[in-house]
Amino acid sequence: MRRKTLAAALTLLALAGGVRSAQDELDADLMRSIEDANRGLASNIALKDGPGASADAKELGEMFVQVEGYFVRKGDAHDAVDLSKKSRELSAEILRLIADRNFDSATDAATSLSRTCKTCHNFYKKS
Amino acid sequence: MHHHHNRRDFLSTSGLYLGAAALGGVAPSLAGLSVARAAELADPLAARPTHFPPKVKSVIWLHQNGAPSTLDLYDYKPTLHQLAGTDTPASFLKGIKTSTQGGVGKLFVAPSRTFKQYGESGAWFSNLLPNLAEHADKLAFIKSSVTVGATHDISILKLNTGDLSPGRPSLGAWVTYALGSANPDLPPYVVLYDGDREPTAGSQNWNSGFLPAVYQGVAFRPGNSPILYLERPDLRAAEQQRHSLDLLKRLNQLGADRYPSDTELRARIKSYDLADRMQTAAPAAVNLAQESEATKRLYGIGDEVSGGYGETLLRARRLVERGVRFVQVVTGDAPVKDGQRASWDAHDGLEDNHAVKARQVDKPIAGLLADLKSRGLLDTTLVVWTSEFGRTSYGQSGNGRDHNPWGYTQWLAGGGVKAGYTHGETDEIGLQTADKDKAVDTYDLQATVLHLLGLDHLKTTFLNNGRSERPTVVYGKVVTDLLA
Image (tube, rainbow over the protein chains, first blue to last red):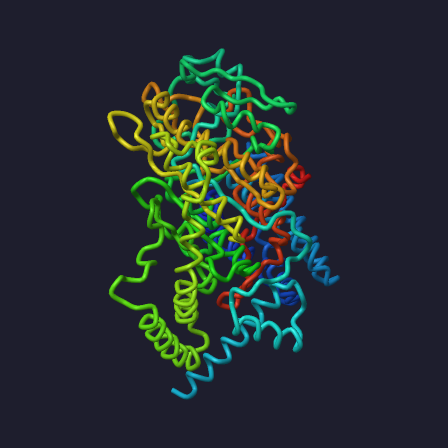
């Protein structure tokens, strides 16, 4: 019984390790999804499409949680942690502005979000 | 087939409507639909209102092809002169990838380089630009320019279109789309270049991308015949030509009526009409024979190095004088050494290269500024001195410099510009922008240019495949510190 428990624990550990190593690299698909959602957000705000823009902002906020988590785990990346946190906060602000139908301010905030992405890429993008 | 036709009609209607409504910065409305459609269908180049009062009517975009070393022109760095010949301290390299092409050599200063301050602003100019230096107080410098550093072709595309791959409209195309034409007899967007070759990456840098084709730039060839086949052949009478052009127009119009969303066809009809009118207007616009000898000398015309570029800039002045909205001027190659022609791209032999290239542009640009000023045109014209990137503080090949996208200088002059002001700075050796919050990317430069033309870059939009697009993609911030 004890042997079975140990085997199960080792299996779980191995699986967790696999997941962990997959998360050690920032997923290129995730970054592409962020880029797509960000372009969609800019477009939907310009078109004053509240539901579409809200969906994009919400999706972006969730993805920046993943990015922030990655850089926290990575360590020695204070700038990236700060920038992804700022991006997450900007996504939330955009969501509020869209709810208020304040599309002009939402455009400004979305542009700031794009600049934050760009600043981070200047330091951390692998190419 | 019938269904296809209806679908095209629908797409045409909704696309034109939304594009024009977005352009006007107004919420869609039925009244807007009929006005916008009528204007678009009648004349896609009809003059359109700005978002707010403009400071300038025209832009002369001086692209210094090949990327000059602004460290050798405007950005004086005493520390670089002190450290020349030594390795670049690691602290200056933090945060950048230096493997663009040639690795990192010793810090480099060209042996003959000296700097002086000019004007009340005290702006620094090197010994390479003695004529332009006399106009120091007309310029607003951006000494914290940044971009994406890659090959010239890619970074030039970004400078002009905002993207690293072809397909997006150039800034001039957006301006033309947003403002229309101020002179129906000339193209509103003209590209000029000197030398014997079309600029690097060619028409991708003045195309209209997903905007209707009528908004693309028209390239004028250098020399006495800038527009191919402009003159009527000797064997054809004026009346014969009139009849054949009228027939051509009627046939094209039949096609255009059947396929109203075919912007290529509409652009062609427009270009035939324009070519017809240009037979009279364009020769007058580009004919320098009417200019005085003093004016020609002012532009450096007559000098074997500066003459070609001088003629190009004099043509640029004549075009903005006639209401052309956007004149994109690309420096041609100049004979640098042993008759070999070169751009500003001095990976080696920077002393020889920049001595000739600076001589090519110094007097013409100084002449352009003086001429615009004396004619009262500088108040309504924006002159932008720009390049795809700058060059590194460290050397390459012993006597050249590599590409530098991390910190370089550009400048603006003209209406609405805070003349004599310097925005941002590079670090002590001129390698990176010192304060990242003051960094000015190509999108920010474009947003600022559009602002001076009375356009909000966030509201200059076009619906492409269901997505609202703008000149600055998802970026762009007007550099308000540069505004008077």
